[in-house]
Amino acid sequence: MSALLIRDLRLAFRAGGGFGLGLGFFLILAVLVPLGVGPDQSTLGLIAPGILWVGALLACLLSLDRLFALDFEDGSLDLLATSPIPMEGVVAIKALAHWLTTCLPLALAAPLLGVLLNLPITAYAALLLSLLIGTPALSMIGAFGAALTVGLKRGGLLLSLLVLPLYVPTLVFGAQSVTRAAQGLDITTPLALLAGITAGSLALLPFAAAFALRINLR
Amino acid sequence: MDLRVTDLAVARGGIPLLEGVSFTLNAGEALVLRGPNGCGKTTLLRAIAGLQPALQGQITCPPDQIAYAAHADGIKATLTVAENLQFWAAIHGHRGIDAALQSLNLADLADRPAQTLSAGQKRRLGLARLLVTKRWLWVLDEPTVSLDTASVTLFAEVIRTHLATGGAALIATHIDLGLSEAARLDLTPYKAQMPADLGFDDLGFDGAFL
Image 1 (tube, each protein chain N blue to C red):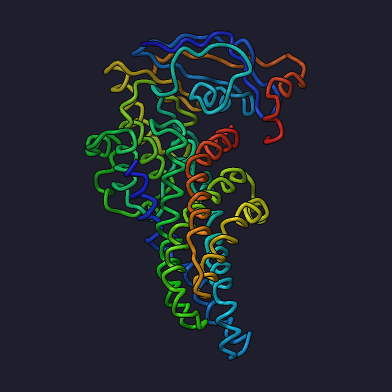
Image 2 (cartoon, rainbow over the protein chains, first blue to last red; image 1 turned 90 degrees about the vertical axis):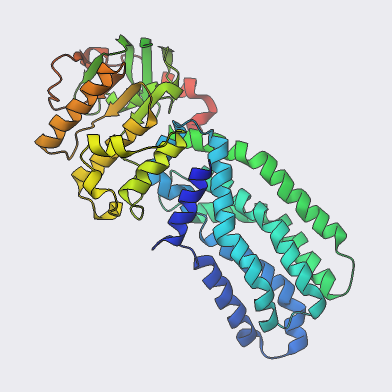
């Protein structure tokens, strides 16, 4: 299975692999929001947690439709389905590769972009922690959506419509933990709920996504 | 080791294509499937490879002993020839791709990115993948598309070597591979006669995904 992970990472970093697409989008969003909202520092500090979490979520969504579609088009998915690796493993590994190439850079860049949005000093640790805990759920839920829509031409719109409602709990608890940290409140509860969503997604969705993929390959 | 197919019926998109297909393929044998376009060759091969369920009938060979090669070769354009092949070897738990590269005359191209290959060279790379899977039954769907005559001869030789070492090959093709020892099966007599709606009933809720 490590061969699949290495191949996916290698493909992401080679020309045209799409690495940096989500990061670039996130950067542009964080630079543009202060220009659009205006220079009032208290307003910016107030909306910063929500903007950063929404931005990370949308950036994560950008590269999802490529997750299985490229392998489907060039026939790799058929060949992986006949390989000794279980389809559940293929889904989990591809979601992990998506997290490493898209979500992990977002989480690491978010504290830097927090400075642009005047995020209160108490909230930086919570921002990084909540993104690290919450984004694996975004990758895994996204992999499920990508598996459902893999055979469709231009399935990106349907994928977004399917996935966005499932992203809501992650967004609510993620942004809430940063907001509470900014106000100096305890963040244990939202972080625990966030971790619960991630653990549940990682445990259940590889099976659902593998089932959807097998049906779409028929 | 053998592949026994008994009374197999397959459908594509809910429409039954073939029924009553039966044949046996023993180790060391090759079987060439013939039939006009759209008669169900690809669907039959996908069913045997375990990629789609059959409407009825039995297939004795489990999918994990089958190496399947179809129209799409599963080649990544930005990886080199060697990287592509090493990936498929590693997926199947093997190392060493030199023999496969040599067999299909790809050794000189090993360090070239796959996107710079011609269509025929890509096809040869796709066929080299069969060798690194080390599986005994090859299920090949139009393996000679875009190959020149020299490469077809080369590939026929690769199949012959595979048969000689206890392998078997099930091949759907329109051209003559030059495998005189291969048995032939014309699929035309097996055209499905059953009512078209039976396919949908059998697929159940999966029909929603079609």
